Length: 428
Image 1 (cartoon, one colour):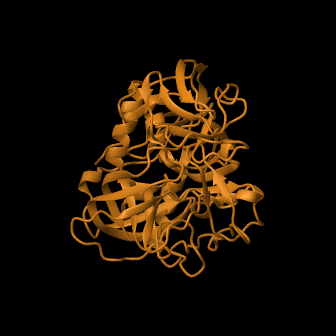
Image 2: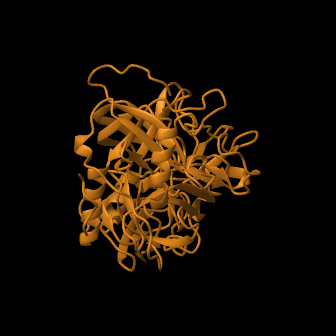
Image 3: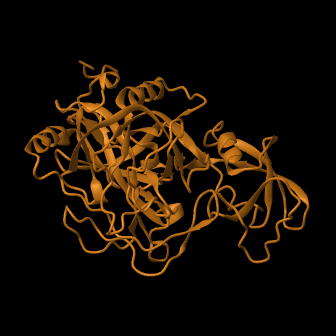
């Protein structure tokens, strides 16, 4: 492939200390009992990685472009993720951003970039949720660049072309979880407008930029926010309740002071010429963590993945060969939720070294097997597993249709093995 010419506060961080980022703030719509499970407050000051927005399954009435929708009502609930146990969540208000209405230069730049963007919507059926983010069109036949966390956990993906309003179904071509980059392909797309890119190695401090994306997940004409580059080559620590790999380091990031919001994930960070220099990925809020309460409506510190880094991952994906970090094609799926067992009669042996099964997902390999809540998975194909990260890494080596041998200790303390044929599942 040939690319276009590459012609919650500002809290001080001690030198050498890597800021922590809470991963993620994808705009997702959850069902009534789990509305906002992904918006987990972590307390104190902090960052969120992502900005794909969390929404209830039955969304509230449409909100204005500047106020964003309201998420959550009263009380709290728990959300059983695909890996890991349930997490608690608070009631949170949606984001608010004024699209730089007093900056005609930023408005003009955003308008020139919008036709090369798509609004991404995903269904996370195993989690009773849906999500929204942003994507950048790379080719006229529908290759789209976005963040991995925008499509992670998705059982189906659709994308609406900003230029025409046409909605396409999409499939994951590949992703790099460690760099938070994913490539998707829109089905039967042709004649799409594409983004123009610049050389992100040329980005400098104080350079004027505009961040663009599906802020608030409301769709339609993208929001935009003007700002400037604060620093380059920055490192942040990302953590995610849904990410089986746990905390990750993102390096080489562009730091900016634009008001990046949930829903902007995967959207472009552009220079004064309207060329993409980065992909909106992370930001901070004063309350530290996901969600934007009414008293903290804006992001004061944000990060983008340099476009050179993202396109390097795309090139690897297009070669069709998976590496230690890049996964190409469909993701193999076992179908277990792991963590503290909650099933009736679950009595996980406390002395067993392994990963306790909370429950299995119906109509999956695990769900159709003898595995049940309270069992402890100890090996997969002879490889010992003691954490959810171990399970994820082992399964990355396989493809749907492959058979694996699962070793486990059942609720009675008896060691067992079974053979399971993996199916296609959501990207990690």
